[in-house]
Amino acid sequence: MKTFSSLDEILDFAMNAEQEAVDFYTQLATQQKNQQIREVFLEFAREEVNHKARLQKIKDERLFDMEVEKVTDLKIADYVISAKPSPNMEYADALVLAMKKEKAAFKLYTALSERTHNTELSKVFKALAIEESKHKLRFELEYDEYVMREN
Picture 1 (tube, rainbow, N blue to C red):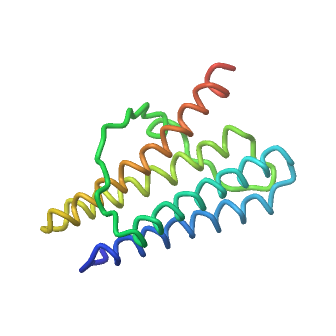
Picture 2 (tube, rainbow, N blue to C red):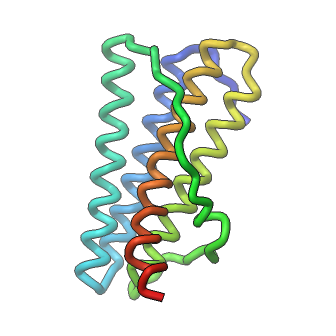
């Protein structure tokens, strides 16, 4: 696992991860035949752009005081079968893909927070993990509202 020596390195790493998510969702959007699903992925990509911009602002303004808070975990991502990207994805599969991606990012930042002995770095990692859990919660709520209630 990567080792970091400064807050800037952490934020650069996180911004790179957000850019990878932008690229991932944009690529999925271009592959979709269904216009509605294409728009869903483009919306996910726009959200990731906003997350990256927020991290850049934190870095530029030297505001590393990120608040750590408790976020509800509906655990839907724990119980749904992973979806594979395809040109004919259903909305439910798109949400599952997004939930799993955000869960993986949450686990990464949590693991990094546990590996560092620097309290300040650990706090930043925990805050980044919380941000990812908020993203996952958004997709879980959407899944609960539009998929589970239909069944």
